[in-house]
Amino acid sequence: MALRDTNAYFKAISPTPPRALDLQSLDQVSVKVEGETLTATYPGNWSNGYESDGFEHVVDRLKPGEKLETADATFELVAFAVSGPGISKAVTNQKDYVRVDHFSPEGKPLDAAALKKAGLKKWDMEDYHSFSSGNLDETFPKLKVRLGSMLRRPGYISAIGLFDARTHAELSSGSSTWQISSNSLGGVEVTVHAWHATPLELVLDVELDGKVVVETNPIPDMRVTLPGGEVKMLGLWDGSSHSWSSSSGSSRDPATTRIDLRSREKETNALALFVTEPRRLGVQIELLNARGKVMESSGGGGSAGLRVAGGRGHAEDVKQVRFTVYTNHHRVVLQLPPLPNLPPEYQHVDNLFDVRLPQVQIDYEYEFQRAIEQTTQMKFRYTPFTVNMPTNMFPMLRTNVTPAELLAEYRRNLTNTCTVVVDEQKNEIRVELKQVEKLKQWLRNKLHL
Image 1 (tube, one colour):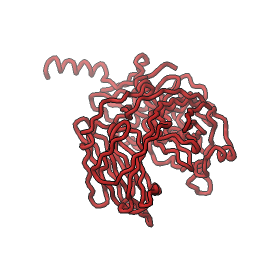
Image 2 (cartoon, rainbow, N blue to C red):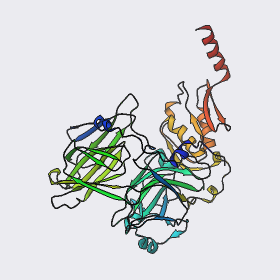
Image 3 (spheres, helix red, strand yellow):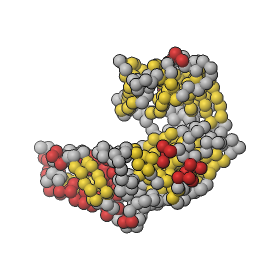
Image 4 (tube, rainbow, N blue to C red):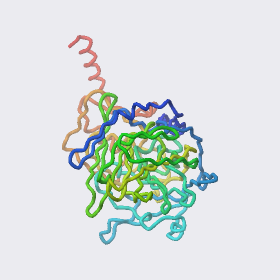
């Protein structure tokens, strides 16, 4: 298959070098608490997945089974799992969790004994069965990679992107990451926008060693200078971070992150909020109690430079904050085999328009376009004029359907003034005015009507 739009791929494998720090940006975040909702407001142009984390990077391509090792740390792909419609085992006895198959870095099946020896826990081997919410991402397989090691832990891990190794097309629009701890492997979970067997490349930032630790009192508005950048503490509250959401902004409009501070029943939690410069600064943040011990985590996360650190206990129990930075940074390209357990018809595909989706639910017109775009790796170019599908079409559920069939249905339901063009030279799908409509528009412009 031919190369696709490679811009995102080459940005991912070419880490942004450190830039001059903009320490005034730390003062561009405002925080308020109304009832049990904490809202942080910040510039809408902050979200940028390719921004520097403050360090120079070494780029390493790891083939299956290869690892990175230094005197103090080891990083490797331990195992991976794939789940999704048509792949996961069927739910039995009304259980919400199903057993998922795990594979070695080379793609060979691993049994329970091998997984236990590798460090996976019982809950790592199961997956919540949720293929019925209507989310478009649930049309596609879900990939979970398990990363180690626990004995010689590397520092912070951050996912950059997932790509088709043959076409360099970006196959994901987001991911979730959990860090390696003293008793648990780390990992990345990502939806793979592909229903055909193709080798993959998962791009990550990994901190190996060169650890620097700074501890200080938890004082709102304090600033701490660290290798690579600076951190500002925005505040400390009683509450949890189990439920939080972010809304994107623009260069003109601010963005917001909202956190529901309510804790679960019988839980007591503290939550601290920070902002970093640069926004992807590779720093781990932990809350310490009066004995200098790390408080049991009650959740955390990050978005556009904001960092949440949670601990079991009250806000008044937090006596110190620990910042840990690893200065030896690597941009790692993990090479993965094609997804196992795909049905036989997905193993050798010549035309991505012929790939069959086991199930897809579409609730809006833009999801109709995205389902076709993501499966075929062809950009669906949106038009400057309004195109409306009949509202009674949605929600629509299709099973065992190809992108070609979806595109034919999309074309049938366009207004009479529009058509769909599949441009293989530009590798894009466009909705255009029909020739007669273009002529009418040209005449109107010419005659100033």
